[in-house]
Amino acid sequence: MMQTFEIGAKDAAERLDVWLSSKLHPMTRSRIKTLIDDGHVTLNGNVIKAGYRLRQGDLVSITVPEEKRLDLDAVPMDLDIVYEDEDILVVNKPSGLVVHPAETVKDPTLVHGLLDQAESLSSINGVIRPGIVHRIDKDTSGLLVVAKNDASHHVLADMIAAHEVRRTYIALVHGHFKEAKGTIDAPVGRHPKNRLKMAVTERGKHAITHFSVKRTYGSYTLLEVRLETGRTHQIRVHMAHIGHPLVGDPVYGPRKAVGDHGQFLHAAGLSFVHPTQKKQMDFEADLPEWFTMFLEEFR
Image (cartoon, rainbow, N blue to C red):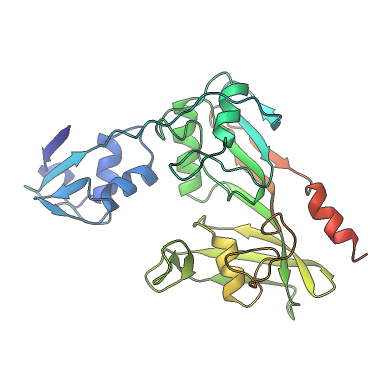
């Protein structure tokens, strides 16, 4: 169903995506941007960008498509839930598990397991991503916060957008570093020739990654990495960009990958203010056994 609004004087000069947030509350800003990018929001009959400044008399039409329903039966899993209350839960995701369903994903996902173990999950992100506020790649292990209701989801999503959620990773990369720490500030977007990959590109989104050296293992270096922004594949793309791709990364690393677990990347730390209790929450997750066993070979 299409809705059309005429912009009045009080909304003139407002950014389109900000204005839509008030009309489509509590839909997240990221989903609103996806609607705009996919052409489901038009201005005076034309496709428009999220940052457009509205003018009095503009006609904004919005069509929110129904999500294709997938099989979301609960699937029993032995998930490592490290914290849970009535509003949120924090789960330590294993490597190899996809976060949420998609048409190309045939195996059960983290969402299927959460449906079995959680009493409730937020619905803001649609029927195929209940509770999912942020994601990590299939072959990345570690901590994720999950929203159990829409109010908490909205607050957490706003905190992530404002860079108020601190995410720390442990990464094993190829090569050695001359510096003890550094910052990579390079925009990340779709690869210009391979749409299945991301890349550092001038047309990409602002992306900042901070890193510090923890230890050297043979021809590899163990890093602590902190994300200031959260672009798709950001750490993997940024490290490959500076000539230190992640060990085991079959997409951005050497053609012959190391091991069979995918990239050596673990979301080890997660810190944020609780969305309703307003207290500081800090979580840490040890490296998975396969990761530590690989490092032990060099000791």
